[in-house]
Amino acid sequence: MINSLRAWKHVALLAALVAVALLEPLALHVSEGVAIGVGVATLLVYVVVLLAVFENRWEQRMSLFLIGSTFLASILHQLVPHPSQIWAIVYHALAAVFLAFAVIVILQRIFWRRAIGTDDVVGALCGYLLAGAVWGNLYGLVYLIHPEAFQISDKIAAQLGNWHMQRFLFDYFSIMTLTTYGFSDIAPAGFPVYSLIWLESVFGQFYIAVVVAQLVGLSLAQAIKPDHPDVK
Image 1 (tube, helix red, strand yellow):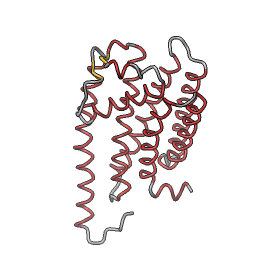
Image 2 (image 1 turned 135 degrees about the vertical axis):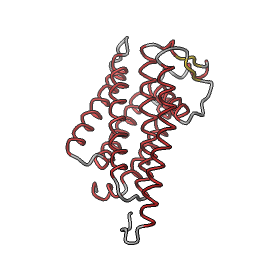
Image 3 (image 1 turned 135 degrees about the horizontal axis):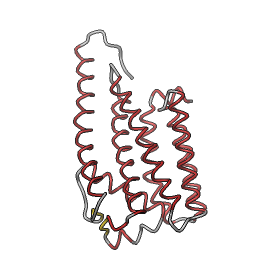
Image 4 (image 1 turned 120 degrees about the vertical axis):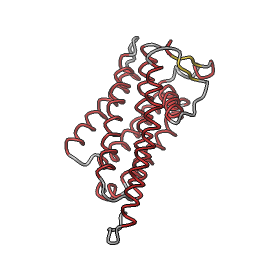
């Protein structure tokens, strides 16, 4: 199963990311037990996919350690919430580290490739979305420690009390920032959010320019090489 998954590992990862994006906000309207079940299902999806994405043994061990630690912090926050929300803070910190690690590995493989295929193009998209999730967790971390750093509309603020919706909304805010699209329902109102936003905006533009240039360069190199192997 793992070998066949690796052939289209980034397509599988994209499917998992879309599934998580759809499942996360749905947990707002269900019981806590069902919400934890959704979290377990999400964990299993990520474990299977990331075992395919992280091919080296040390990468697999590191990813599993970070996944397990992140999931444990999430469960502890939901079952034994601390007044200072320490487990939520730990969750966001570990999730940001894990997702950044995933982005680095995916991009490293893309830049080491001498031939490009459809799965590599999808991998570039996955790296872009995962980078947005990195900043989403950083925004969530800042919100828990210093909520005054954000200016949030009343309608959005009413939903931030739910753990799942809070994560989803800051991921949403991050993607809007990464694409430089932006909305006014969540806005920066102090440091360090100002710094995070401009860093993410610059990263988003730099990512598109550099990664797309790499993909186009590899594609052109394949096109002008008469005996290049077909890449699936």
